[in-house]
Length: 232
Length: 234
Ligand SMILES: Nc1ncnc2c1ncn2[C@@H]1O[C@H](COP(=O)(O)OP(=O)(O)OP(=O)(O)O)[C@@H](O)[C@H]1O
Ligand SMILES: [Mg+2]
Figure 1: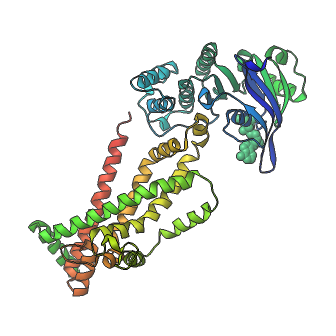
Figure 2: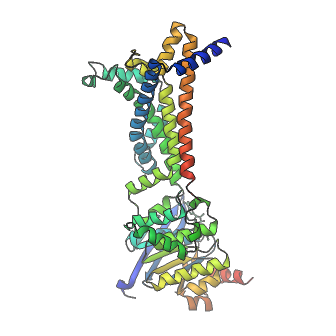
């Protein structure tokens, strides 16, 4: 793995809050074109890892090198929306990225139609359902045309058909050249989406291997227990 | 009871007659308090947003002071502004004493802390759920401030109404700084105080009713505007 291909590089990153260690000495390099899925139990530190990598949280130790902010996008686990119409939320992100009218409105509408939100475009965004809000967050992330997309449980609130549509969208973005770092509690989804798995346990990386290796024989006890839970 | 009846009768009589003095006093009240609200908002909105979004030494002390200053007694503000504007004071050269400009300044000083303190709390509350997303979008501080002021627009409109209400209802500051001069600095509240002391209670009460009706009208217009803006969503 040459340095040039490294899109994201975390070296010895630690995050502490109120005396608790949320991430302990995490080192992780992500290359261009990967689809990295971060797995782990509730509270393992998956969201924290995505947030420090994206620069939303500050680290207490370690170094991070990442593409410029404008080239990254983040679908948060609990997506926020602005108190305006659905289409104006997407237009807001486009305006931050320097996209002028009339292209701004046209692209916003196109993004919404791709995320199956076209019929809701003039609704107040805060009245959307959980799943619709998640799709809006993805439309907003997509609007930035990122090189690196963080998606924190992007299908957690979605019905199976919508989840499948989101997976297709993510793969479509990936084909267009976007590197993907996501989390999920859906093991089947992780199998479909991942080229590589990072397994976190109490803020530590306990496995970091290709998806095929990970699923064929997880070595850590924590990962085995996690996958066993799926089988029950 | 008969005082209220007389007051109602004389209020409607004055309104029906289109009393020129009454119109003049009412318009001056509106002009002074609306201008003071504008000045207070121009200073208070940015300061409040800034205090909500930045962290620096002494911030807590400033917040406590702003919150406490919401309860400034108008007559004390009037006195301080009087001293500032008096001929030997630091702002004496403006010659604003006993003019509407001086009254606007006094009321702006009075309501600026209200607008700043309430804006600070409002923006903090609106910011909390959006903070991480805005950071991940890489917004500048200015973009963050503008976005949140817009997010909180309806709450901030109510904050401004609170400031306006405080301004138009106070008597101490405009009395001291304006001097209640007929035809130039006489406003509704100072007229009410004067007529009460002269013993013309029905007239004073009639003016009081008009004042209440005016405040009600302003808040009704604001509410209608809000309803109209919200009705644009399907
Ligand atoms: N600001 C904070 N202060 C203290 N503890 C925190 C803070 N933020 C997160 N934590 C804790 O850090 C741990 C890791 O949180 P994180 O959100 O990264 O977990 P996660 O792996 O994403 O879990 P989930 O699967 O439930 O989303 C949790 O135990 C959480 O309670
Ligand atoms: Mg999480």
